[in-house]
Length: 251
Image 1 (tube, rainbow, N blue to C red):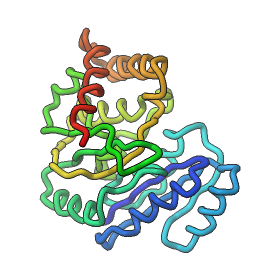
Image 2: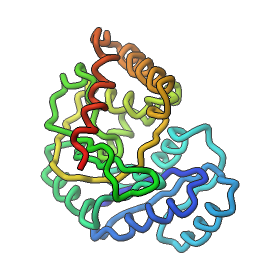
Image 3: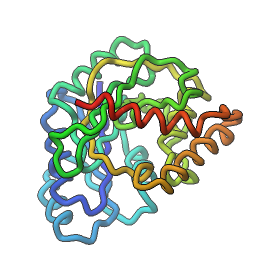
């Protein structure tokens, strides 16, 4: 089974090298790695990209309109049976992660498999600030503000071919909209595995400030309506509370 791992970056410098090292350390033999750089202007990132241009990864470096546009560029070039994202600065939790996921997908009972994620201090990746437990899958959990951890979720490429990639009308919560579209709207088969898949740095667009949190939650509501559903009345309250609960799971 062939996996495609997509890494998007912009002015990531040596953090990109850390991410690539975690991908290349995987024991699974069939991995395609695509790096999508948004034409980073800084010398540090350019130096890393040059160093990584050794045939081990496909490198695309050109302007884009944001992280989801870059992710779509990676999806357009992916050839693996299963696709996952490991963004610059983030790392797969261990060298056996993809091999374990391949064994789970080989069971043939799921289109989407997700696990857990460690959310770490951006300055010290050894410090876990939040633990995102994926939890057993129930479609109705979306009504409680739940979604699987995007960077801890792997999806068969066929799903993207059938239902599309990230909707660029969503500037902050396109990952939520995609998960909602795949799992809630189209009812893809999903399964949770108790495996910490990724260690990623806190500081994503949806968590930068209260304003960003508000905008992200507004896009979550829009995602329901865009897919033809009426959002639950307490959704905008429940989703932030779920994020707060993740802090109590940190170790």
